Amino acid sequence: MRGVGKSAAGILVNRVRTGGFIMAGLVRKSLNSPEETRPFEGGKGQLELVNLAAGAVGRATFQPGWRWSEHIKPIAKTDSCQAAHMGYFISGRMKVVMDDGEQIEFGPGDFSIIPPGHDAWIVGNEPCVVIDWQGFTEYAKR
Image 1 (tube, rainbow, N blue to C red):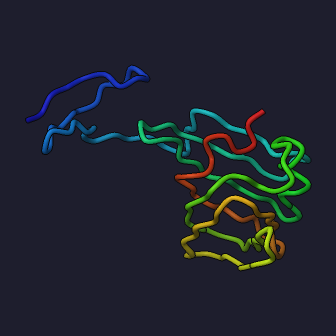
Image 2 (image 1 turned 180 degrees about the vertical axis):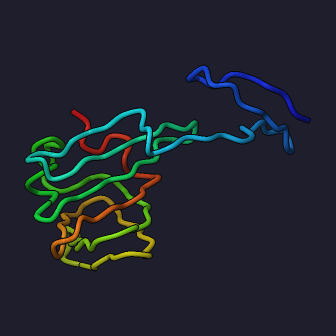
Image 3 (image 1 turned 45 degrees about the vertical axis):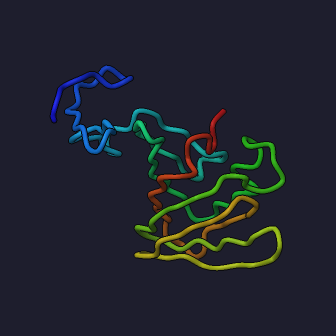
């Protein structure tokens, strides 16, 4: 059964009843027209967000020289990043080191699951672009 309703943001959406649940039908948002942009310290990048019923989806651009412990830690006020991330790497390379010493490097085409408790930095001279649909709701929020 289909119906038309308004989302919490006042956007008209199609709703489809499936097995007792009502879920949104087609929804279109664009990271090229973000609902919110959060700059990183030192001009080392930014986070662009769109908000969905299930949470925020973001595109982060990290410039060469970016490091979580230098450019986000002053905003987050934690010893390491406490956000859990689930993302896809579009370009660039990022090294992630967990608080327990486990480490990995991500690059273009990689899918990542990164638990809370890590530092990260950009490897090389290319900006790193990541789409994340789990850990950016509070990331770099002032």
